Image (cartoon, rainbow, N blue to C red; front, side, top):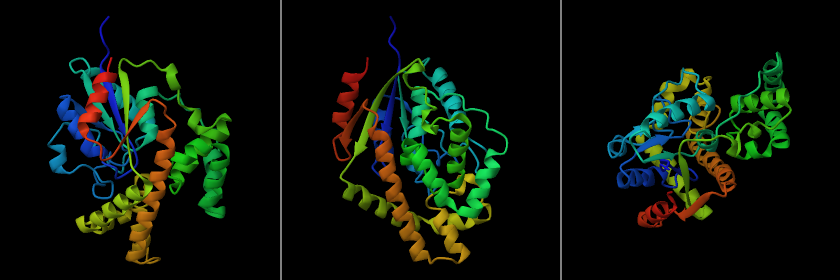
Length: 303
């Protein structure tokens, strides 16, 4: 019986070092990297999404980075279809591929598959939009927390579009949004090894703070200024841009906007940890562990 190829999934909170590790693994296993970071798809967003640099991209072949525009509609279902299509061809002549990113739902879509989402009942989105306008985002956040704590723990709860999408599915189906994961019922033509990177929370928070400072030095304010006129697009309702848009609106100072980026990034990293920790298949390593130990684990684990 022929052995299946292996998909190595590198997961963990933001700023923990997933990109650097994935490049080292790709070089060792002569493989290519697929990004499962839902913000790095967009070519107009580079600094604020901590997309791999030109130097990093040159060290290993990367896919699904800057392959879409902020004006494109691109869902987790679209990504699942595209990623599986790519892997089907890629694994015809390769034994390993690396899937890396901090978007847990997107990783799960590739590994486990997603159920087909229900057709949304007419008027549902309009009612939720009206609630958002009248009662504010807190109302939607609270309902999602009550009805689907799993997705609430992982989602960008400051993004009203994500909240409305989840709640309209919940209202229409009567099921949690997070339940639209097929789990182990989806058969894939590859085996999967999960590698998690982690560190003490204080270290993670310090790395996040320093990364944000670096983004500002690299020109994040200018990048966000160039995107300001498109601020209502779904892709831009995210940490790093949303806060600077408020600064451009004149409602907060730049200094406060930067502090909010750091705070919201730290909160997001905590939700990422909650999502990834529920996967018992993941083998966790400290961010400072030698890459040789991780490679040894993968070789032993690979079928």
